[in-house]
Length: 222
Image (cartoon, rainbow, N blue to C red; front, side, top):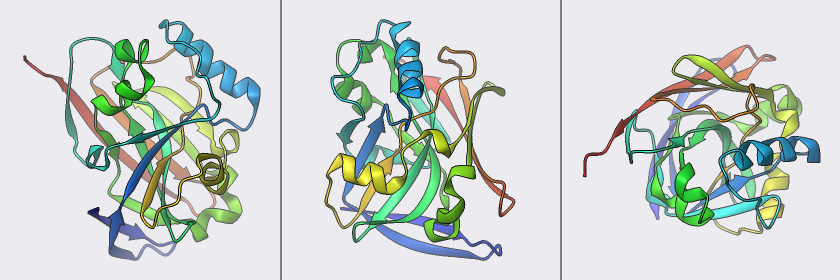
């Protein structure tokens, strides 16, 4: 088990630090509500010779210490990148808090082994979050964005992805302290973007607020 500190920002702007006991970290993939959206992302990956998954949606259980707030992560030389996702903190079987994250992945290794590629790099999240109850009724209006090297690469509302409750049921995970990444949204240009700077955002146009967090990569010298 690992304890994380989250800063919960309420709809009226109040900040409350909380301690979350993390027991399981699960990454979702190919989790679009509509098949055409899922197939769009699969085609993007095929362009990099990454095979189609055996199961849709797919779920990858990874080491809990991969979850980080670090703004600088080391990567291997080659093709690797991050993609924006919503991230949910579950307690007692229900979604409690939500923030934005990036499942940084090695695309070369992904061609041969999905699970190994997911284990290679940290999974970056913003250290601030919202209460799920405050956004539940207008969930589909929330917007995800990713900027790579300050150019927008992804943007879509959450209506294209499975809701947190649906992810939970599909994954069949039972844990008192679970964090789940949702899986990503299609790229704007129909291909994955690569760079050194990644700015991920979640916008709530109803309550007029936004979570924005940037991290950078550097190449490891072996």
